[in-house]
Image (tube, rainbow, N blue to C red):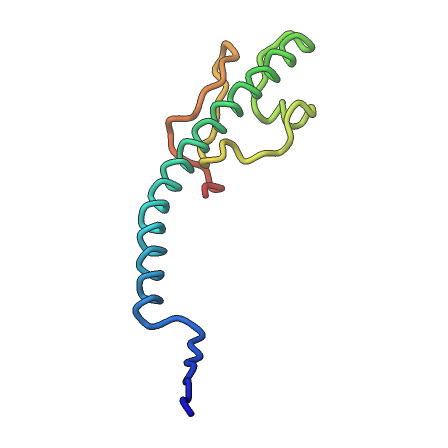
Length: 112
């Protein structure tokens, strides 16, 4: 009588696991730098949108009060919520003509 041995191989070998880890590592090495690039681009677009929103609130304030507001006046009169500035931490400023721009004096305390 002939006996047949059946091997029961469940699971992965060490080589197979190392190949999977290598593939995952390569994918992470490729994707992580791209996420950083997109994050700075998102923050820049968010800051641009915030400047445009504040500019529209300045225009609304000028139509209501016939004067150019400061940021503090916009916040105290309810035209702006108490925000910390741009998503990238930079502050904005309003010049004497009512034009809103990103401050060139550095970042605020709430930068992230």
